Length: 302
Image 1 (cartoon, rainbow, N blue to C red):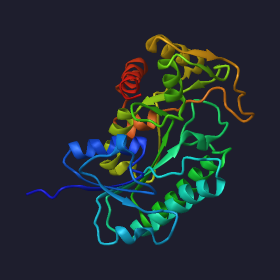
Image 2 (image 1 turned 120 degrees about the horizontal axis):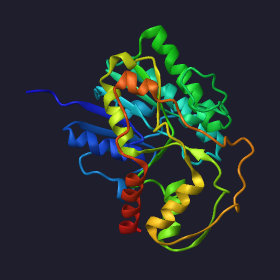
Image 3 (image 1 turned 60 degrees about the vertical axis):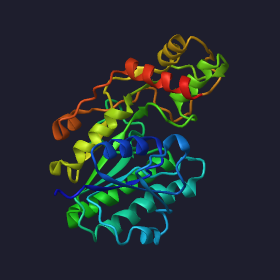
């Protein structure tokens, strides 16, 4: 009888963590989540073992000390980026603590989820070889964590891959994110403030992210590499707002009421060649069908 694969999802109570956990359960894997808080009802799965612990504390591992994991995916993060200390502690120190703990264990793969924000104002399409000049505490913490993990790969062959995500969207995302904010206001036919919408961003549907993570777990040649994940096709924010308004049949966006940040890139999207080459991966869900699925979810669950 084949032994079941055992995966630890750090941040398994979050948006992407929920979708990854659900897919792993479908594959018959054993799934453990470690997070700072219990899962909300909308993201709770009956067969997942949920552990509550703070990875930024060095004793976080007490609850998993006697467990063996084949794979570890670090989706953990502190979502309130206004708290700079907690953001740094979770994204950098938490990643260091995880890596140092699992360095002593025989795991097959450790995936660190990073952000396209690590590139800062680098010109798009952004590729993995570009110098990073992160502008926020969040992206700087992600960048420092990636550097640390790649150093221990070089020194000790720790089987790590850094996946840098762009704008992920889909059902069950937090309501304080761009697409859910617009959807929520449109399905309620509210007036809501927006930027001028002149920015271009890259969007990727959550199940495409999950398929890439699962491919990466089994690709040894991705060890020690940074891989961008996105569609590679930037979309204008203003057009997205009005597409949601059209599909949801409501909403009154007040463009220009939110001022763009001084450091904000107007055009941000990745070069995805490495994902195609190393993972044999391409996104399957086009933006509009993914958006329709997302809107229908919030209509049913609002």
